Length: 475
Ligand code: ZN
Ligand code: ZN
Image (tube, rainbow, N blue to C red):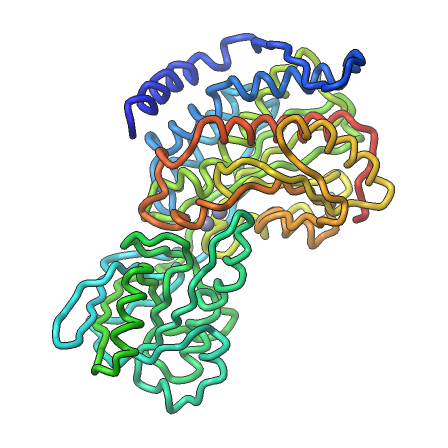
C-alpha cells in the first residue's frame, strides 16, 4: 500500500466510525448539459451521484472487510467473522431490517500443495488446488499429457491419458469485457471429471487468468452430481509456458504433485440480508447483491469485497434520504458463491413463492473497474423506463444499447431462472482477471475513483428502481 492509500485508509476508518452519526452532506452539482432547469428527479439523482463520487464510505467498508475480517473462504472462521461483520455494519449504516438466512454446503479444506517439474532438473512450480478437489494422498509422480483445451481432452483416446497427469493448456485472452473467461473456464470446472473418465491420475490446468505473475489462480470445479473427479490444480501462466515448451521440445518430463485438500463434512454459513424498506409494502423491492465469501489465497478485496462495499454504500445513501422511497431495497450478501453458488441457490429456493415482490435485481461481482454500460432483461413495456434510467446514468460515462441483454451474475442469475427481471451495470474487466482468485487480490488493487463511480452508478439504479411505478417483468 502506498502512502497515499495508507492516508486514505486511515481517514476512511475514522470516517467509518462516525459514518452513521453524520447527516448526509449533500452537495448539488447539476449534471444536465442543456440550459433547461433540472426536474426534481434529475436534481435528486445528481445530488446522490455527487455525494457518491465524493464519499469515502465504500473504500472504508472495503478497508474494514479486508483488514479486520480478512480472507473468508466458505465454512472457515474468516467466513463466520464476515457474517458477523456484515450484520453489524448493515445495522450501523441504518438499514431498517437486517437478518441472516442459513446456507449449508460441503466444507472444502485446503492444506499444503506443491508441484515440481522434473526433467533432468527439478523446478518448483507456482501451484494451487482447485476448490472442491480431492487430495493426491501423498506425492504423485507421473508423465504429463498436454491438451490445448477441454475439447481436445474430451476427444482423446483413453489410452493416451491412462496413468498420466493431464495438462490443459488453454490460455485466457485479455479484454475490457472479460469474455475470455467463459471460453476457457470449462477446463477448470469440467476438466477434472473428463480426466477421470479417461483414466488420468490428476489434472493440472494453465491458470484461468490474464497475468504473467508466478501466481496460480484457484477457482472451483463443478459440483459432483454423482461424477468422479481426479485431484486438480492450476499452475501460474509462466509455469504453464515453461511446461509447454519443455513438453514440445520432446524431452522426457514428469510432474510431481502433492495436494492435501478435500471435503471435510458440511458447514453452515449465512446469506446476510439488509433492507431499506419502502413506504408502500405492496410495491415490492429491488434486489441488489454481491457475495460475501472469498477465496483463501488473497484478501478478496476485488472478488467480491468491492461488490459488497459498492452495494452497501449505495443503499446507505438511500437510507440517509429524509423520506423513504416507494419500494424497498434489499441488499443480499450471498454465502459461498465461489464453491458452487450455494447462497444464491438457497435464496432462490427459500423465496421462490414470493418472486412477485422481487421487482428486478442486479449484482456487483466484477471487481471495482468502472461501469461502462447498462444492460437489461425486462419486459417490452419497461423499455421506456430503462431508457430513462440510461439518461440518468449517462453523466457517469455509462452507455446503453437496448439490444444488450443482462447476464445478471452468478447469484442473481438463480432468481433470473425464476423469472425475475435483471439489470447489469457492466464493468471494465481489463485488469480483473490478472488478480482474480490469486494471492494478489488485495486492497491496493482498488482505485478509489473507480470504486466511487460504481457507487454513483448503483445509487442511481437503486434510487430509480425504488421510486418508479414501472413494473419490469415478465422479461
Ligand atoms: Zn466473485
Ligand atoms: Zn470468484
